[in-house]
Image (cartoon, rainbow, N blue to C red; front, side):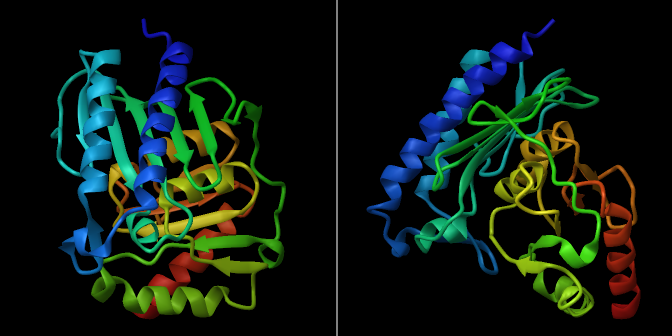
Length: 267
């Protein structure tokens, strides 16, 4: 049986080590080093080297585990345990010298998430949780907010790279939220933003067309902090990242109504 507390402590160390590398590289990074994975979807040697370092250390920590990693240093796996790694979530922010950006590492088995660690580099904030334990930020227990009215809710939106498929929906969504909630923000790092909901800074975060590496660690942290996640229709199969609505739980049903109204109007 895995010692999830000990594994989490080691993953925090690994994430912080990768974060130090990102912080050092940010000061000397040049935009001509950027490669395009897709339209407005970027990658660089920093993402790739960060992933290489993380994968190497995680393999040493749990040799029997496979990997799902964004930049491809390890492929999909059918092993009992699997690491889900985003070595630099918020790459666009990073290359523009903007916050936030982070390292996201999760461990799951074939059925559920077991460990989640997100290290937000710019704030030097390490969020973590393991199955059955409280979510923490730099060692302090965190919980979602108690806000239950949309009019008071501070909400984060993610605008997908799949712009042609998302444009009408996002336009309707902004129209239906703007002026009817406490505030709207676009941060640019799904993993960090899930943790911001977990720690009560925001009440909700939603985006489509993400990858599992974007949300795995933050999802567990949010769930252990008392939050809720679903697809845009309220389903539980959000782990792929294709549709993710994350909230403090208190406004989840109200947000689902707004999302579904927006989907209907843009059809």
